Amino acid sequence: MADQKYHPAFTVSNIKNHIPITLEMDKAKYSTWSELFKITCRAYDVIDHIIPPSTDTSDSAVSTDTTNNSAVSWARLDAVVLNWIFEKISIDLLDNIFEADSTAAKTWK
Image 1 (cartoon, rainbow, N blue to C red):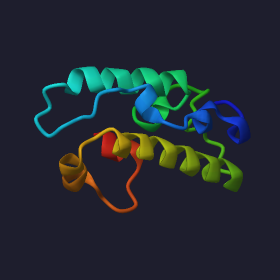
Image 2: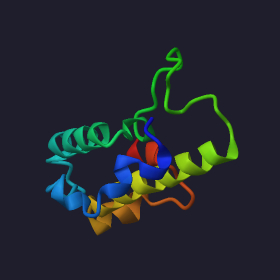
Image 3: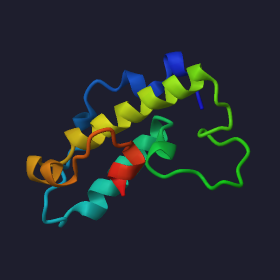
Image 4: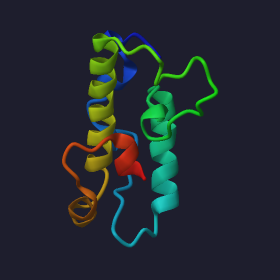
């Protein structure tokens, strides 16, 4: 993963510029919304926050590096992705899926 201090995900000031669809409860546009979301996550090097890499990869962004700095960086990036999800879903859907202290991957599922 890129250096956390200058991680590309931190440069996104408005996720709506990348994902113009707001996901609604009826799920009619879920496929389009989710594909746009995954493309954006890949482009900004945070796809592993919603789709964890397989455990057999040694260069995984979820790395075995358990230093405090790494954990803090991971948590900060996860919060960015979680905010992106919350910004791109309807209020009704947010009310149904919101869970305190959740992660982007858990919310994505």
